[in-house]
Amino acid sequence: MSKEGQKGFTLIELMVAFVILVIILNGFMYGLAVYLEYELRTRIKNEASRMLKDIAGYFEGMTYKATSEFDIKAVFDSKKCVNVTVGTSTVTLCEFEYSDPISQTILDSDGDGVADFYDPYDGSNPSFKSNPRAVAGWLTVYPASSGSGCTVDSPGGSPGTVNFQCVKAVAGTNIFSSVTVSKIIDDYGRELGKAFGITVWYFEPKTDKYVSIKSVVFKEKI
Image (cartoon, rainbow, N blue to C red; front, side):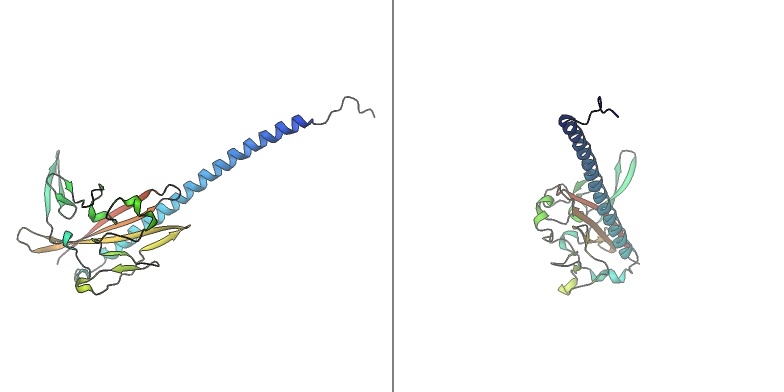
């Protein structure tokens, strides 16, 4: 049988095919990396949401007598809640979050645009990526100096306890949680209840962006 007219691949053709294959693989690997990064961010966000829900449930199920075990910092002591008209709606705003509820000026002692009641850091939050446990003094429950436990400030300086973790790790990223406590009073100084400000936060992988979610639980004095 004659082999005349049959041709193999030339070196140039092989090189072109190789270049095309590399381009395809690069596109595939980039897409895979983007997907994995998105999946990681989603996992962290979902775990942060679960932490927030669990901590809120802990305080919702607590008796009012048990709330006396949590220290109230001076900045949140004896605050009032007032009704404020916004447009055609009336909303209730409280002094523990607003230094002036009428003008809706938030209580923001470090000037970073985050109300202290939901702010775990005294200063620019992204700056604490390198030292995430250096939290603000106005917190009552906050991550311990090491491990996953919580430090709980109680009246008189005695340490308190909670049954939730303040730090959880997801694929090498730590998620933190903290709680602030405010006493709510009426116009005559009588205690009406307490508010627990819960913040869960983390620093996003790669970007180091500060991300937080928050909630508040009100406990009426009965």
